Amino acid sequence: MSEPTTVRKPGSLWARLHLRERIKDRDTAIYGVLLVVVLVWPMSTYYATGSSFLTSQAAHAGTWVLLAIGLNVVVGFAGLLDLGYAAFFAIGAYCYALFASFQLQSSPLHHAYHLPFWLMLFVGMFVAAAAGAILGFPTLRLRGDYLAIVTLGFGEIVPQLFLNLDQWTGGINAIGSIDQPSLPGWITGPWAGATSIAILPNFNFSYDPTAYYVLVVIMIIIAVVLVTNLHRSRLGRAWMAIREDEVAAAAMGINTVTTKLLAFSIGASFSGFAGAYYGASFGLVSPDSFLFVVSITVLVMVVLGGMGNITGVIVGAIAIYFVLNNVLVSLPTNAESFANAVGLGFITKTNGDWPGLAEEARRLQFLLYGLILVGMMLLRPQGLFPSRVREQELKHDAVVEEETVAEQVPTR
Image 1 (cartoon, helix red, strand yellow):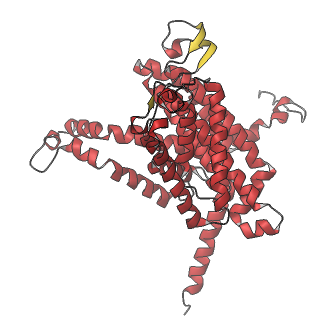
Image 2 (cartoon, rainbow, N blue to C red):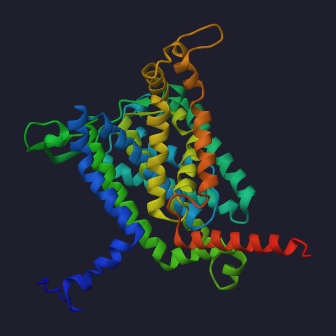
Image 3 (cartoon, one colour):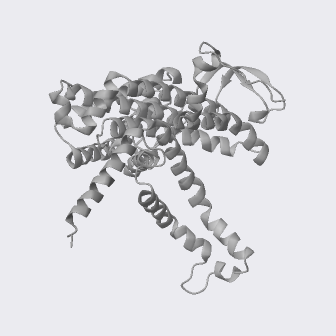
């Protein structure tokens, strides 16, 4: 005898939550998987490795996720190519470092400030947003390659300023001994290496990887909620209109000046947000950490993940970070171990001009990285998880191109 089927009335909890539709939605499924991984990561990696190294690495990866979410607003939503994004990252980091260390003691001010991290987190965000508006205002009439060149110049100027203003920023010596965040209380447990669950009063982060991991996860959740609401708002639709056709958007009554300025400012604010967190988590801020390669890496994360789609950008940032900091770093050791395992140990030794397999693999690290990027763009040019609109645009462009080629072929 078959079991009776459960009839779900329209007013039931199942119907109100639309669980079936949510499970079928790709982005919701990705968020669910990411949430599960985030919750189990600290404890599972600690029991697997006996240390919090992977948790610390995940906390560092969160910085790049925040940067990618912010750049997605500028590039993915508004369609404005920004090659100087690392400048706002530097501004946020130096804002916190200057006012949370002894650096200003040796400056012309001769007085050090130690402002709370939680205050400077938002100060860095607003200062970076103001810098984004300053950059955006004179570049409003520029598009495409011209805009990219101007933003590239801005991205080169800011690190050089911090490098040369050594009386204020320490220059090449960087800013160290940066204050750590603190909280009135904190809960620790087996996920952080403790033997039991306990409440710690007057908790100082003190480079605790689990504490920074929890902090960056909360920051990413806040960023995702804010950006998602912006994307669905009237401003988000205006960004999309400008990205598709700025002339048509202006003809329909959209104030392109204000809208583009907001895109630059909001995108820069997330970078400043991430910069303040970076300064606290590393305890050291140096001009070398904000070079042009940082802007390019974040742009690669956005493009590879899927421009315009928040979940795609998050996955892209995690994937690129994993390739750069795990796959490529461990490549020499893994190649040497594999050669020894299959009986090719002779190629691991230095012989004449041959430096050994490990050294050769180390030299070819970024060649492999480039091949991965080229292969990804050839196989999936729309990115890992593109937005629905962009996916349809690429399919339409491909169909139009095929029809054009077919029309040009002479018929017999």
